[in-house]
Length: 546
Image (tube, one colour):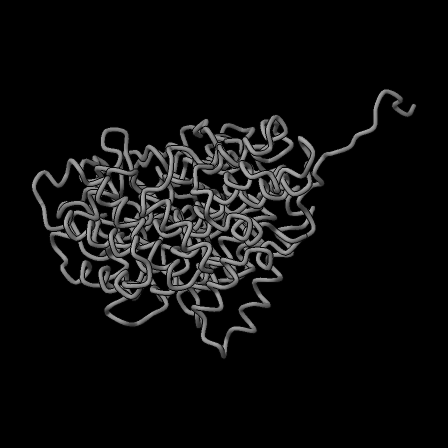
């Protein structure tokens, strides 16, 4: 029977059926900027195809289904045999399979591999963020495995494969493999040198084979084919490759004790894992585990930046789309001066994050000492700042939709729950700030590279020039530096973002960013930009054209 009490009007249509890559001007421009012109057509075609898939109704439904049906742990089979398997919804496997087939675990061996992969990761994870965890760790495992050329020769082709196989099988029977990581323990958390998991050489075995005994407090994606694990060997903290299935087809001892009941990231399984005589293969040298795994840590930290940029971009796309279709107080929301100020402020945060993420990806593609040194300082600084900006952006964007944004069907609550994750994963804020201090104190080339990078925009904006001068003053005063590390790292990240936007963004974007973030003409909440700025152009640039 038809409803007679009212007709539904003034509701924004779903943001669906569009090219997520093509609708993001900051991202498309960054890809063009950082890609060899000879490769650009192929890269753009690849990313447009991924963008259309991401924006499709089908893929958006996969994302919703994967989160509405979280993974389930099966410790034993019906007969009482220990199996330690995690069951995922089919949509999880569809998302993960599409990510792998789109090259999101293969950056290290392709031309412009990091830029195209970072852009693809930024696009695809807007559909669903949880499955990005195994994608990220698989991608990031490659530089760690390269510490052992023999291991890399065997595993790298599997990790960079474009074929996803979900079954637990010996790795040599699979066309592709996924990797995870096991670092943190109950008593230590980020202080991995406090780890108590023991690794002892196996008597009579080949060199490099160890038996591991202990626990890991957080192990994401426990159905992965292999894991890089830190454990205490006779020579000190060391890195080990731990496969789920051994070469003879038997299951390695990998006891998933329980899955975490997390705030967000619901589609992804994070478990507590016990080792008891678990077989592991030494990666690198005994006692140099942190050095061996640091390449993986750095790459996943950059993915935290990219993942946060993706969340912010989707939040801004949803907010601007809603405001463009919703009427209130006599006109469209997007034309109201106060709402336009809020949307422009959010758009600035999103564009600054995207621009910085792609610049760092381009540095990975570069073979210059300058860019390698830049990464040492810029990655932890970006990880600190960009991931911290994600949660307030998601919350404010949700508010732009009002009550509509507070209900699950809008998708905004899922963005908000996911937003804090990247700030915690791979070292929370204090860990990143202290890592920046270590780089400043021990690696002068990193600071020189950073100052050279931001100096390329010197003289183009007086507020940026003033911020650079203030940063140099802070860097010259090392008294009580640890207590003000967060302040310093925040300023470094903002100066770097300001420099990149002044060089590459439209004038209205760079002007608004420098006036607010660097010039101090800004309040404590979004929507407090100076009214003299060209905010309409900033908002229109950020809006997804469907």
